[in-house]
Image 1: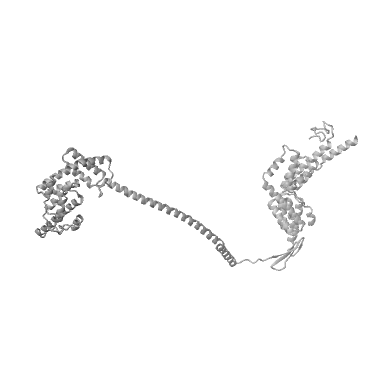
Image 2: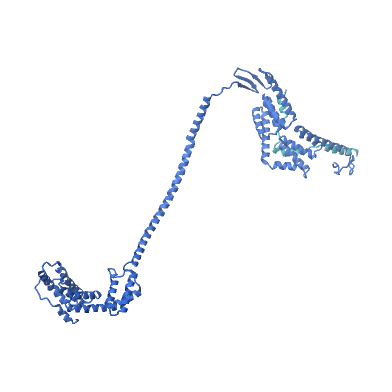
Length: 532
Length: 48
């Protein structure tokens, strides 16, 4: 304890040892304040909250700086549902003693839960509104509002008091008693609650004691008939039926059926159309998506088909080339033939005919235009050209010599074979052609002879054998043909007559049916040529 | 027997959050100690 005059710490003396002020009265006041605080604490411990509030207020009137009393008063207010009043006491306590004050914890706990504080404040506002309704004599609204208040703030003692009072006023003594009992559980010795509770119990005892109609404060009961009870509640007349007709099983079943029908109708008219529309929209979206995918796939398929076609063509070309390379007349075979020809020429340089026969196989491998289907290498062409130029020329000369020798020996078949080989190698030799035709003529093959003579006349206009060939074509062929027909009746050869068109092509305007001229001796031409 | 109107006068509006500040400022009333100090001061002045 400190001196109220100088602030010095007081001792056990009746005066301040610092300033000498008499402190006897001051000490008594402090004791009185503490006594009230102790009394309030005891009351609070036994849940006499309203009594504790009175004692704590007395304590604070003696000493407003009694921190313990003020903090306890805030707690009691908070327990009675007066959170704002409690908060105010704690704030004041905090201002008086800023340090080491338990009020800090209380304030912090309330402020840590703003939702709870907001709910308490709203309940207080509703209570004030209910009080306003009471002053406006809107008791029903006040009762409704107070019920809400107690749902939100179940410790608000004043709400229990006011609601109990309203129930008493409206004659609802049972509810009044129940409400007041609930309030009494929070504040056991609340004077108002106790007085109202006593009134409610008295009213209930009075009503229960009178079975017949009796008057009550604020309400009256009257049995109007055997089916109902009529009583007054405030300004309202309540008619309560005694016997409520029980509902039969058939009506219950009917109600269930009606409910099912209503439910089905709601499903049919409200839920199903929405579901159907939703499903249709989803299906439409899926259709669009599938269509797009199908279009993309079709494009891919077309592109792949084109690739397949091009690859098939390429494959076929490559296969043809492979067949060309590996089949008849292929590279390998052609090179093999050329190698054989070269080997034969090296081993037997004089046997040019054999070498020429081998080279002939290469000539047969060429196409109709006489060109190789496959482009050979330069070395191949060079070797082939060398062999062809050296061997073929010699082979042709050898064939010609053999043919002419056979011709002179009247061995026309051998002459034809050799001369034909010579002519095949060297088709520019008109002499070989002439004697080849003459050999056929001497063998009696006038058709072949005519063909070869015609070829001589057409292809070699400057040949020394031209006149002899023309003479034969003009006279000899026909005569010999006639002789042949006469001498060889029934000859199998029916095409021995030379074709006049061929003759006309050779000698336009020539009279093939003219006089019979003597057949010139073909050997005369040969002798004139002097080659043989 | 209760008089409803008289009983109703015992009820006062509860303190809301908006009213807390005003309540705190007006709570600073004079206590008995203040009265004693004032009396002691007055007595001292009188003696002088």
